[in-house]
Image 1 (cartoon, helix red, strand yellow):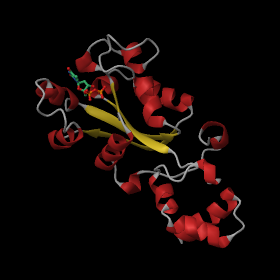
Image 2: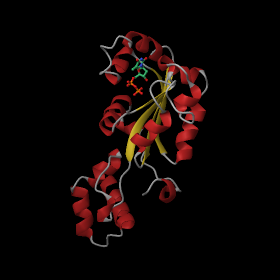
Image 3: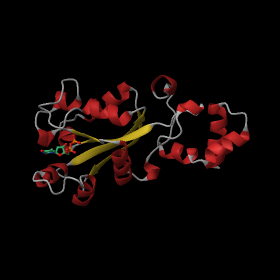
Length: 200
Ligand code: TYD
């Protein structure tokens, strides 16, 4: 049923009158990429790019300081699409998986205490080059070095309370999204203004 629906959408959106061409796209993994939101075949082939996804988290200080709305607003205004959102209390185990590369750092115990001190709001945003763009929007890890206009540059001043997390690479984003979200918690939906903001 779902496959038939995607099949129909592909025919409509890719203007492929030819069923064989559409079938070959489906069997080449395009449909699963569409569902997962991962980058598939480029637009050179006439197939619209499926957009990147990234994980953004408002850390406990951002939630306590009621910055969630302003942070969401920045991503919406930029034209990215929200495909997943939830609030949760992070466990030590989830945090150590999330920051697996930092577990041996001297600052990790303090980071763990801070990140588990209250709820976080985690989101998945989708759009063209969203990983790179959101790192720029979030700003330098150390807020003292973050430019004004970035989230960290505008809302924080110390590295241990830098308000927000953003995945730092495509691979990292994929790993983090799988860690924080179940597949069914992510929605594939069309923005009315998709051709202006999302499709490139
Ligand atoms: P890191 O992954 O290096 O940075 P980013 O969040 O920009 O991807 O570090 C993860 C978090 O660890 C960082 O946001 C804040 C905290 N941290 C410290 O508290 N002290 C430090 O010296 C570093 C490097 C990070």
